[in-house]
Image 1 (cartoon, rainbow, N blue to C red):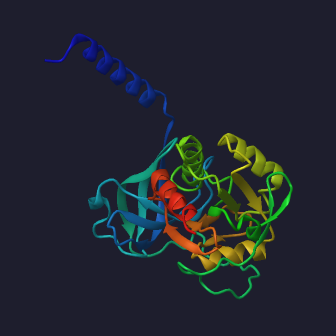
Image 2 (cartoon, rainbow, N blue to C red):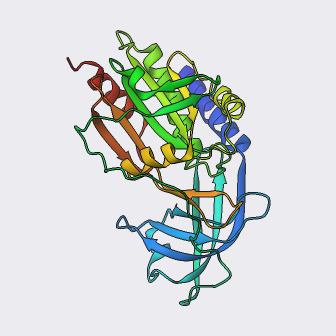
Image 3 (tube, rainbow, N blue to C red):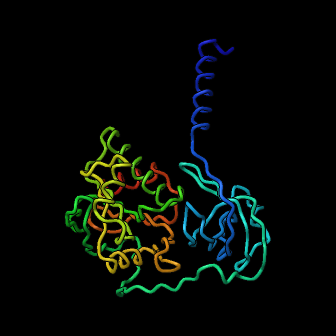
Length: 291
């Protein structure tokens, strides 16, 4: 038998959850685009989409559906319409409909060139080369100064609007910071690094304002920018890609998160956005315990 006080507690919880659901911001957009790739998971399509006025410029990005049937019968090159739904912490597409099997010439194509340098891909066990950045306080820092600490880093740009991408990376890092700070007997030799690949926009003051939104602790978390050629080099070493469809348009990109151990060796390379803060905390704790 359920006691009355338990019933009251359950009722209170249900009401609280309902209030949260009601207050969460939700936006819906009707969008057209061209399918670039269909992922093996059956629920993700990479789509080059048109501009969404007032929300997002034209770019290429992977979108998930909640029902895999939404993507059945599609192939790269198909022109589609879909409804994009975004909340404060999630985003997905639905009501996907094929309009044509011929790519639209009105959508932008990748044709922006930037200067790069030759770098080799890095794998687990490889030493992280030294990279120099400027942090949100305007201070010069380098990856070498974190030797002896576990370094976890990811890549973002501050004007990225889609909640499943850069905002999720930053929210996850905020959760990692909080969990490590509150964990009994947690290691203290760790540092988080959020690297912007939009140095033209993401100046130190912009990065500082963005960092404060996530209640960052500068003792354990830095937001950095730097020369584009160096940022391009470190991203390419880990398979992180970013590009502009046309000049002055927002960046399209994929996602990477990396853990480097106390000896400066790559311990973990995490693709995309499916990882949780608990998983990253576990990796950091494991790396911190290495001799």
